[in-house]
Image 1 (cartoon, one colour):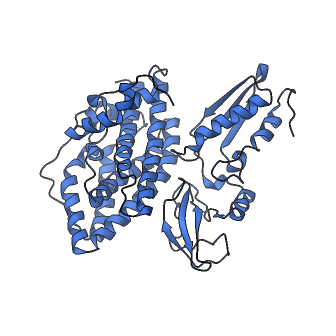
Image 2: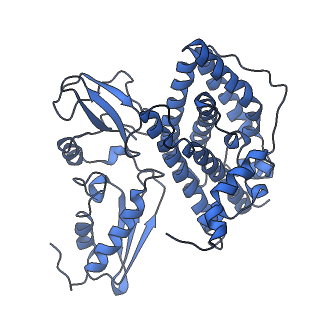
Image 3: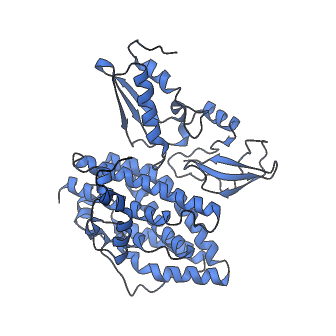
Length: 169
Length: 252
């Protein structure tokens, strides 16, 4: 735990960032999501955080910036700059195994394929996504687009429940 | 034209295509034929606005942010927009909208694929991300074109009418000017003639599967990349820019 008053180090900043949740999937932090690319601590408690956007139009990006600034200021940062870099582009391949497991427990089926360079984006078209509720594979796609840019809508015939699938990206 | 100006113009063209296309899709918000489609079209629009923002941000940074990304999006006039004529066409019925989306997303997908090899790192990064989104868009619209084409007599007729109406605007997507010349020679953008060949093949395959006929290309309308537009763009801008024009400097 980081206490207020002390000068922030790079490690402390990473720890603080790892406690900022993704607004759409609150069980995952922004560091687990893999969008934080770099942290620099400059003189006079000035901190520069570099992010890669998850999705081009994801409204959560604006919130990430605000949250990062608010948290770091609360712990003594005098000035916080959030830089955005586009290259290399974010991919769901950067989600950790732990993050995927947390997602599943939260009721969202995590991405099942390795996307690489978008060549294999859709993986095997016949693939059945595993239901995060009952674990059966008797599922079908309802819609490729869902409540947020990252998710598709699926339905499980096993437990008769709809669920969200975090798309390969 | 120097490279910086060419990159600036090119970013505006890419951004404008995404912005205007997204604006058209949002007209469907709450009017989709089914709930899932309503969500899908607004999701597509969100991706397109995001891509537009990335290109506007980059363009703004090239000019020292004298004009912000928002200024570029909302405070230019009709002749200063470089989007393709296809994306500004009215939505018509669902068949017209999906056909328009199909023809455009096939182009976007090929364009972004080419730009992932760009010598410009920012364009390369934006495009690598956007390519994934364009692939989802292309898959979604192709599926609808096939479904409508092979559906009922009525759906087939409507989607054939849609392509008959829109085909004359497709060549415009591949028109090149001094911007392209400069960017091709510097390895920043792709030769649109090459993209055109690929586009014809990809689009042709899907149309064949959808049992749709490619209309005669007798009447072709071009000019988008030079700021020459159809009458529809002015109407879109009137609505889209209302707030920024009526309340200059307004912020959230």
